[in-house]
Length: 135
Image (cartoon, rainbow, N blue to C red; front, top):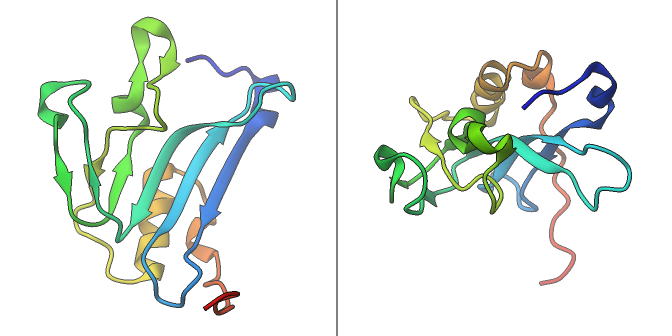
């Protein structure tokens, strides 16, 4: 996939955190939206902390049904179809485990900074506790 300098305006970093303090489910994802007319951005790479994932039977055989019990990364290179010049469907279906599995949120952010190659990610502050809106 070729991204021109003018297209760089459509690059985003999404950070998602769980509603509960110390909950699982932190996510960092790079996204690309080709233009304003596109309905939504599509994922390029995603790293998830303390969330399990199971690959389906697509792509290279070594990734088929890989069961990942905890933190993992949906790498660009295993989700990109070079011959078709596009990403796989279904929101980056293939992932590999993080080794070692980050023990703290701070470790996760440092790992994400290295793997996603984005300076400053490790400096993102832990979100404040907001509690539940509904019980």
